Image 1 (cartoon, rainbow, N blue to C red):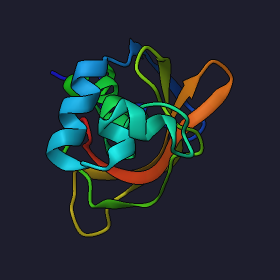
Image 2: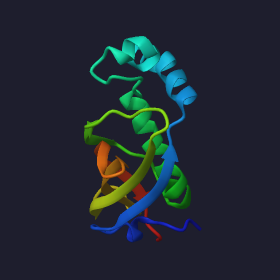
Image 3: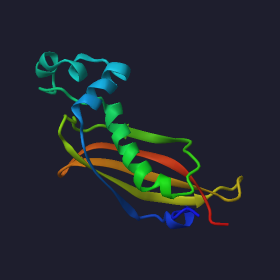
Image 4: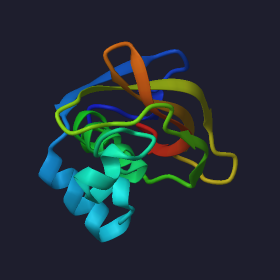
Length: 147
């Protein structure tokens, strides 16, 4: 039986998803495959860019948050996927070696009217480097109930 179900995901609850350190090789490999812009791949080009150094793709940064979310919540929960979200933002760049802390806040929770046993949970995702937010997103997660 999963540790977390819809009933545990109450508005106002905040989950500390832990920390991770950004690995340069993973960051560049992701960019090479999925977001091959010069400031994600080339040190010299990145130094001349707005970022003044090799910066992680925002999608890589979102993936870092997702991994911590899976490890700390989804693998312990009655997760049933997600129908999508409302926003995503990268207010500050991420660099190799940064230590990032992930959190998740429950904003709203309601039972589905059309699917018994399914709850819809609106979540706010965030990643911080120290006090500075580097990623945020709001989306809906679907979770099974205990019944």
